[in-house]
Image (cartoon, rainbow, N blue to C red):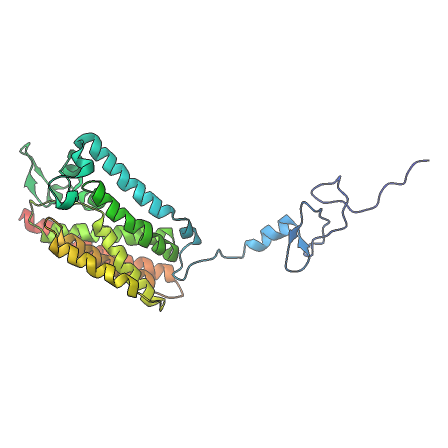
Length: 302
């Protein structure tokens, strides 16, 4: 005697699997493997996907992506700085790693990489050729923030990136944090270019990391959080800047100023169109910095 065919519903994704479950939205039968827990009952994968289309991803208080919690931007910054030191060691030998002639080995001996990428205005190299930002080497205003004079210099700067930078990246998201870091470093390098003698060079991530210190204070004030623990760090760094020979005072203070301006541009705009306001604010800061660099160039070439 033949059995009657089953009339039990089957999963719409697995026709061979009988089920008594159904999607609470579309009422299609779904099996245990396909069901997705919902506030009421279960939903099928298609309804969940359709519902998520209208849901905006979670953002930080400043409109940044939650991907900043992963710290990828900080890791990339540290990797680039380490790479530059490794290349400096390849071309400059041991002095590029251990330092030489500076405060406790902080300021290392120049190498071909530091000569190539450091900031200075307008001067002759030993080859008798004019070099510097005013000679058209504008890239120095960027590369200098990734070049450190020795391992101690690198460790001091990257420790700030690994601590303060991670906090800022969580608050701002990776893209806004990178904008802050690059604007601070760029502003510090331009300040060194503008205010230092044209034949004095400088380099280091300090221009950017000093911007991180002031940025934590700005963001915490905006969030009504206590910025007190960072104040001693800021004061210590300022004392360090003015007391240690060979430190670029203009570069450090320029990084502070640019970092504060960029942090304010990112922290204070509100909805609606917050991202647009933040972008315009950062663009204005960059425009002022570029104008200062152009004016300095015109002066040196006149």
